[in-house]
Image 1 (cartoon, one colour):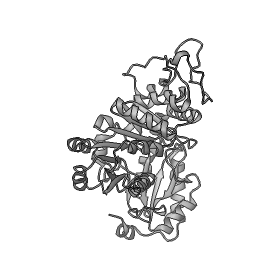
Image 2: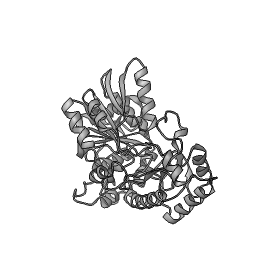
Image 3: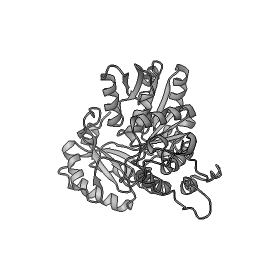
Image 4: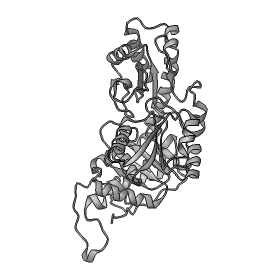
Length: 397
């Protein structure tokens, strides 16, 4: 069994910035390190007579895992388990389902989720999958009535659709279905799915929580302690165990999450407003803009609008040209780092619902004026930008 830290839990009334700084510190005994040490060990000395204690890292964890889990559990409000990656966390939740379980999945979602669900459906019917346009409330409500698990991603990737978690959770509960929410884009600072009625919350800590594009890590937070025990078992038998260094990096990154997210979110809102007024840009979608179809929902459900936005230019060639011309912003596929990244999402497999000229922008911690100058220069450099009238005609529904 894992050895428990002897450090006390800070007052639950502390503000989130303070909790990020003080949680997961380990022992409060004099002479002990302020940070939980990295323990590069897979094997531990066994206790006499079968007494409880840490014996093998895959089974019993390491102090670093537990420190990171303590922090995530506090932020989300439920017991947490960390995994080797966000995909490992997703897979662990799905593996809790019975054979032939009925899964409702979003049309707009992380590509890894879609691939995993398709593979499971093809592999002897491990589960059945129904893909739903979750921007259509009527379609989602009808699907929930015939489900064992409803998987939500809000805001979604890359269209940034916002789902009413409380409404879906209430309908799922009435139908006897579970609800899992991928909270990666919102982070625990902006959205609390468990408090809205979800059963599981999934994070790719690779992204905003880690925040520096230097690790792979995932986490699941659950409503019921019994589900945590099942997730621990899945992690053990699947070998989906994180490294001590990765947990160290994620915990260190999480210390500054509130600071990083505040800067990135403020810049994202400003860039979204400027892009919406640019003649070479068509539709801009950011939950913080009043013209976002789910703006009121996001304002009610979230404590902020996040640091990811999307915008459309004339076509795929124009989008590629924008990506080629930016200098400060990196052309890269992931999100949530201190550096801003841009990507044309339709170039990825399985993105048929994504407009060819759509660009997803993850805003980092650079100065907003430098980011805007970079974008404006790249947009100006694209040959013969469409007029505002032409762009309006080409906007996606």
